[in-house]
Image (cartoon, rainbow, N blue to C red):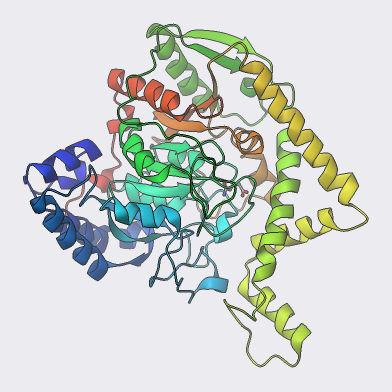
Length: 492
Ligand code: GLN
């Protein structure tokens, strides 16, 4: 079969079970595509053909023996922030260029236990800090829809790999939008789960109180399959929550769009810098949901202006603390010929971290320093609580909240946004992480340059099933999620 990369996860699962094709064939098909096409996209940092083929053979044996799970033999790409035993894990940084983890992240271990085949590790902004994937030490990943544009970030490699059909789905992480925004820029569906739903064990930390892993795929249905693998309590992560996991696939039709109350925050659609095409496409998608029986309710999210300053204090503060461990002594990059210990610390960190990471360490260290802690960090924590309360108040009257995922479509590579311009682009995603809520991006059309536009739906705590179900029904009634970039049509 030459078009295996066109199949949905359900079709892959069924095809493998019915022996229409083997996992080896499927894996070889993807490896060939990566070899042929990824030079243009640059989504992978590391491809692992030998391990993938061994896993595929084991999957084929399990399927034959009748021990298969729904995803046994299906290939996947992991964001290079998830530790993989025996395979390089870089977090997009020179600091970890040669780091080989002695253990698997829980998400990776679960994927292996489910029989998924790891194709390799995909690119990302350095330590997940950024919105373009350009801050990676390994260079910029390209947007499959327009190779001179960014795929978004920080999970840009995950998004580009799926959008170019170089992996059927991928893991991502979202600290302030890094699943939803690249999904939006690349025309994909991506889910950021409730904080605590997916284990952070072995996921290299950016900002611990905000980080959350989740699935990136073509459709809500595909995401549901991966959520069934990723979600769940983990004794190795103390912030992972002990709460029963839904069967996200079984629940895909569990929520009716009929009668669904969708909150439309009036502040969100008047944001300066909201692109006219993005606004129109998102409004059209809401109209479609209305036709399907939803009710649109205008709501007030009064804290909108505080999102960017609050997030850009808390995230760097936590990052500066998390990144202290990279000191050139224990692991990671070490400078050449240090003259003394101070020199070793200073030069290892100056040479090992890129400019965006250093900027965040400086901001965070400043905000946490004795003289400024109360004025900045503590204040930001108080505002964070107000932002959360704002959402909870809104959820008294609505079931979900709608927003764009980003004010614009994908930027040009090298657009050279100032840091503040880039941070302002996170306006629609970061409050969700500050509040710990779940949210999903779904593709809803294109702008005048044929770049994808995304709709974001934000849910109340633990409403992942509801979000996936609403988008699943939207996707049954529309075909935006089936559109493919020209490069994805190429055959290997
Ligand atoms: N763009 C945001 C930042 O740079 C979000 C990144 C993320 O979610 N990892 O912090």
